[in-house]
Length: 152
Image (cartoon, rainbow, N blue to C red):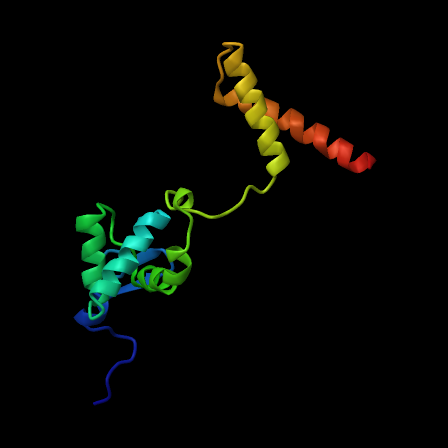
């Protein structure tokens, strides 16, 4: 008798498949989103140094180090290996950049500088600042800057 290709064994029914940042559990048809882990450059450097001191450690051991010593959720295996690949770059990172978790620059640095100036002026004049006032000012500045850009 030939096996039925359309039937699934109990092993297949309980199998979990990882898709990008989501985990699909075939048993209960629920998708569980995996929590994103944000590590600072300093924490990444500590992981690299720990691995350098203990080169025979496996991913599970490094993940355990992150949860126990750095008090963070365990990053995925690919994240750990990506961090280990950045060791040389992290080793020469200036100390003021070690506290950052991202090295991205501002997309619109001129707008950001003008918003900072606005916020500092409001603080200096003891005028309360809230989310809406910042958004409103950002929209005004964006419109003005776009008009000036189009005129030049």
